[in-house]
Length: 44
Image (cartoon, rainbow, N blue to C red; front, top):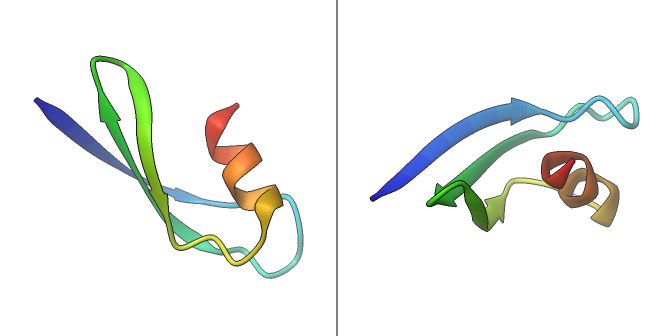
């Protein structure tokens, strides 16, 4: 079963809205980030 979480990245001033999909507590997909820093933020 997958769970989706909505995050707002705070790493830079853009503040991307991201949707993170988790399966069994592990990230399987990240959408909405405009740079790699957003994906790194979501994974932490």
